[in-house]
Length: 608
Ligand code: M6R
Image 1 (cartoon, helix red, strand yellow):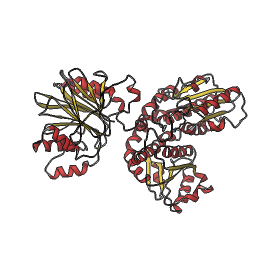
Image 2 (spheres, protein in one colour):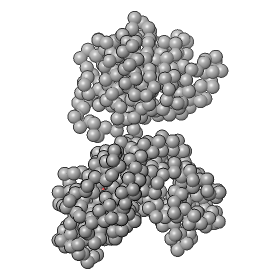
Image 3 (cartoon, rainbow, N blue to C red):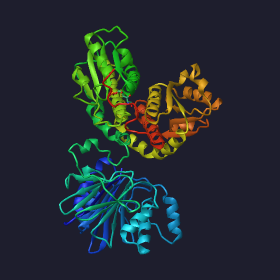
Image 4 (cartoon, protein in one colour):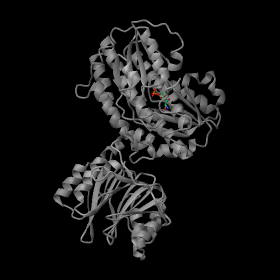
């Protein structure tokens, strides 16, 4: 996601701007640029790819100037090349932008009709053209800025530099975050407090609808009608890094997009990327010797465990008993000391999961904890801790913790299979190779499906009920899809095993109940397509989440087909998690619910 920095300074800014961009790298980007004003002239350096390339450009052609703006671009409109990289210049106006100008195509046509020529494929360029047009019409920068803000719509954080106004930067926010930093005789703008951390810890966050005029020693904040508003100045905490939404509207969105990175961290603990072998697991649980595994957890963590069951049984031939913890703890399940038990919990504090753990412990089982919070009670009371390394998950709806739980369970299942002699060295290498490829595939998928998920969610938000179907590991995923959707959009959703359709839920099928079918082109594909046929025959609308092979193989009409890359069965649950997360997220955003803190839900459920 794009990162923005600006400085109205007293000493050269180019190097400092690039340093600040480096602190925004965690968002992901594909090009970068910096612009300054020097001797009344705007100048810029831009480069495709990593900041390293921009630095090389700056070394070769340094930029002077004490006022400047900089940007890391995560391409949305237009390919990631130098031409499309920000800052964009039009007639003495320089613009950096994060977000999407939704009405850019009509504005572009209008401006073109007036004889303006566009040099990029970006939505951002219309902002620069509008501002240049208004300045040409005789408006001062402040008036031009306000007039422009009343023409554009969408989600944006903008920082603008005017050549004829070298001692000020203008900024605006409508969606993505933007912070003003107060220094000594210098002022800063940044996408978040992390970018500004070395300069200052005195921060004012703009709110949606704010326009800021930032000089060397102050900032004035206006609404888009030009009325002055007041925003608190706060001291940013050292913990800003872990609780900051970054450039995202919600923690949930940020956490969805963090998945490629955090899964890589998680995997690096369990598999060796070079030798493509699993690393030895904690010795307290000897998977070679245990007679069976009991898994227990709640909510999303339970559904991760259910997918884990398929893997442990398939790859390690290890029988798995699994139940939701609130049932497990009371059902007086006979347990043997030869069994081992796994408890899965993001927080490590969930009351029912902890009670189930204690029940198993009393029965003499070795206990393993798959947790995110390593200092948690569940981790402390376990014999072996398998951290999922997802980093803090703030959104109540679990996303990155779920896929990291899956990555860890998949690695453990392969390791158990190796220990039990059911996974050969060749199989181990092949399976680990797929796991190693997963973060890259996730990043690609997140990039390609986002626009479709956003438009599809608008359709989905019109319905009151949704049915998710899947087979094999796609069955628990169907339940997870339904859970995500109901949790944050409040649309009633159910997840079923596709084969169960005709045993009941088929009675509900009509044009008012979309059926979301998760069906990679795997061993079960043809059977799932038969279930889809049963839906289609009853006038049901199908949203088909499949892969390229599945899309090519099915001719059934659908309301939408979401086509993912073909991937191996072991990583399909993680890859197919992405569309169901984004679908729930965008539906909730569209419906205006409190995405990060949905009604009645808590992140950590410490009571029964
Ligand atoms: O912290 P835990 O993983 O133990 O939490 C379990 C559930 O409460 C949790 O997964 C819940 O279902 C989430 N809100 C799902 O998005």
